[in-house]
Amino acid sequence: MKISIVGLGYVGAVCSACFANEGNDVIGVDIDEVKINLINDGKSPIVEKDLDIYVKNAVQSKRLKATTDLKFAVKNSDITIISVGTPSQTNGALDLKYIEEAAKSIGEVLKEKEDFHIVSMRSTVLPGTAKDVVIPIIEEYSNKKLNRDFGYVSNPEFLRESTAIYDFYNPPLTVVGASDEKSAATFEKLYSFLDAALFKTEIEVAETMKYAANSWHATKVTFTNEIGMVCKKLGIDSHKVMDIFCEDKKLNISSYYMKPGFAFGGSCLPKDVRAITYKSKEVDVDTPLLNSLMISNEYQIKRVLTQFIEPLRLKKIAILGLSFKADTDDLRESPVLTLAEMLIGKGYYLDIYDKNVVKARNEGGNRALLEGELHHINERLTDNLKNSIENADVLIIGNGSQEFNNIEKKYPQKNIIDLVRITKERSSELYQGICW
Ligand SMILES: NC(=O)c1ccc[n+]([C@@H]2O[C@H](COP(=O)([O-])OP(=O)(O)OC[C@H]3O[C@@H](n4cnc5c(N)ncnc54)[C@H](O)[C@@H]3O)[C@@H](O)[C@H]2O)c1
View 1 (cartoon, protein in one colour):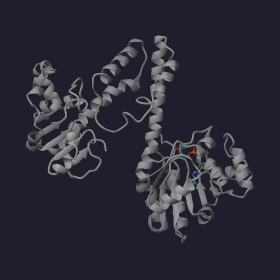
View 2 (cartoon, helix red, strand yellow; view 1 turned 30 degrees about the vertical axis):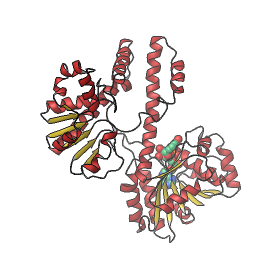
View 3 (cartoon, protein in one colour; view 1 turned 60 degrees about the horizontal axis):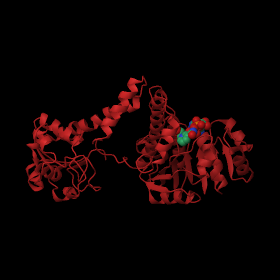
View 4 (cartoon, protein in one colour; view 1 turned 180 degrees about the horizontal axis):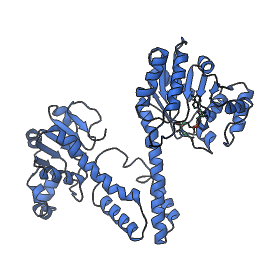
C-alpha cells in the first residue's frame, strides 16, 4: 500500500520503517529537517533498538523516503497516518496544536485529490477528537465529505520505547476504529502480517480504549508500588507477594471485576480495603490510591441518587434485588442496601423486592437482622415482583437475578435504572444504565 506518515518521532519513525519493511511504499513527513536527512541517509532519527537496521533496509530498498513536503507525501499515497506529538499543556489539558496543523495541511492537499483517501490517527487523542476537531478541519480545508471522499481510522499505538520494533510486530492487540467499512477493511489488510487480534469498532471506542489502557497501566504501577511500600515497612518481600499475586489469572490478572457497573460491597472487599489502609496509616505509609477506593465507591452509590433518581422527580420506587449478589441472601455491606437507606432518608416511597432475602427471613436465617437493625428495610421488603413493579414509577435493578431479564421489554412504560447491565440492548427510551 502507499502510505504517508506525518510526524517522524518515536511512533512515526518506527511505523515508517516497519510498514516499509512489510512491503509498503512509505513517505515519512516531518517539519524537522534533521530527522528527514537522517532517514534519507538510512539512519534512525531516534535511539531505539534495531531501528537503524530497519531504516537502512527500508531506504536501500526504496520503500521508505522522508520529506518535509507534506503535499508531495499525501498526493503520492492512499493512506495518511498522523503520528505527531500530543503533549500536555501547563494545565494538564491535551495540546492539539500539532494535530490541528497536520489536519489542516492534509485537508488542503485532499482538496486537490480525486481518489478516496484514508486519514488515520496513530497519535493518542482524547475521545471526541476525531468527531469534534480532526474530521471538521479536514472537511473544511478539503471541501470534501467524510465517507464519501475520505475515510477516517482511529488506530492507537501501543508500543513501548526501547522495545518499539518488537512491540510493533507483537502488539497486545490492534484497534481499528473506522468511519466506514472500506477503511476498516483496508486497515485489516494493512495489518494482515500480524498475529495479534484486531478489533474493528467505533472511532470513539478506539480513542477511549487507549486512555483506558494507559490509565490502567498507571494504576497498576501505582497500586504495586503502594503494596510494595507497605510490605517493606512490614518486613515482607513485596516481590514474592506480587509474583504469587500475578499467578492468579482468574481474579487478579483477568477481566474479572472489569465490567462498568455499581459499587463494590459484600463481606470482604470493603472490610479488607479499610483494614489494609488502616494498617498503612499505622506504619506511616501514604497510600493515596488505596485510600481513594472507599471514597470512589461511595461516590458510585451517591451518583445513582443524584444523577439518575432525583432528576426523574418521581417518588415511587422499587428496588429489584437487594442482596449483594444474585441468588444469595447476603446483605453484608450491600451497596444496594445503602442506596435503599438513602432513598428512605429522602422520603421516597420504596418497595424492595428480593425473594431470597424474604425466604431467608421467613426461614429464620436473617430474621433477627431484618427485624432488628434493618427493620426499616424489612417493612418494605416483599417477594411479590409483579406488585412491586406495578406500584412503582421507577425500577432499580439491583442485582443480576435472571428473573429481571427483559424487564425493560415487558414494562416499556416504566423508568428503569439498571445497576448491573441486565440487558445489553437499550430497547426502551426510559431505560438508563448507570455507566454505559
Ligand atoms: N512515544 C511512545 O512510546 C508512544 C507510544 C504510543 C503512543 N504515543 C503517542 O504517539 C504520538 C507521537 O508520539 P512520539 O513520542 O512519536 O512524539 P515525538 O514528539 O517523538 O514526535 C512527533 C514528531 O512530529 C513532528 N511534527 C510535529 N508537527 C508536525 C507537522 N505539522 N508535520 C509533520 N511533522 C510534525 C515533530 O517534529 C516530531 O518529530 C503522541 O500522541 C503520543 O502520545 C507515543
